Length: 340
Image 1 (cartoon, helix red, strand yellow):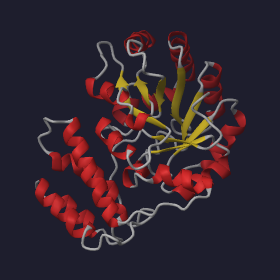
Image 2 (image 1 turned 60 degrees about the vertical axis):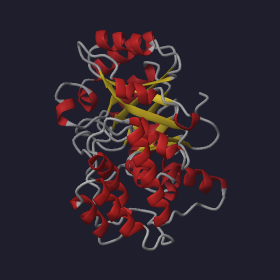
Image 3 (image 1 turned 120 degrees about the vertical axis):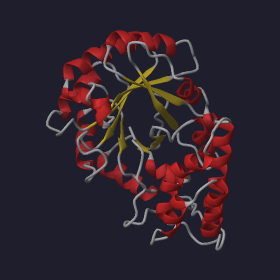
């Protein structure tokens, strides 16, 4: 596959209500990943292609492709949705979501819930492969409540013609708690004949390199770590090539925040509460600003956009040359949205 070159592929993970067209546009200026993944199209009996998600899939941030993702459990309606997607020939990648851990999703036998039904996955993927002639992938977890059937699940995905797999090394039941099991990713890599992208708690360029070395994966997918640090994809490439690794300052972070705000306002001209929207991103950014979390506390209490930006100026521009922490401070929590 052309997307997998000689180096380690980097991908932005889909995060609901976070990784939209505006955000992708903003971070592409700091060092775009090789591949972007959009939020999913929810497939139901009467679903259409949601306008905001379609806009993201067609956006080509930094000239890079955006993978469309679908979530659903009906072969008939998945086939119908694929026909809608095929009306946009610029869409090159299609992904099946088998990893969403939200109870409201898996209880309807979609997302991570399908991992309990391997033969249903086989049926869905056969329909997808028959109806989609371009690159097809699957984003999944180790299993629903254990990894006991992981090889069976991987074998089904591979046998049904998927071109690559992204594996988040937790179970659905774990949500985002507990340790990511990279050893299971290493086992999956040995089992598979198709490329595997590793996903889960990759926060720095050095950690990405360590995961590659440990697992033999062909790529890394990063979600929360990229919202916190939009330079991470650039840093991974610099580390792999032996170049000097860019180290952002607090002043650089302020410019990043300004760019997110501008991109969000442009992408959502009717936005009513831009401060609430911006806080979704600042929750991630804030875990590397100061070890005591004072920025996070003041940011969360701020009312209105001007008050919020004043908090940003106070903490980021008082000493703009100060380093921005490479990794999140361990005592702080970003309270993340669902990363699928």
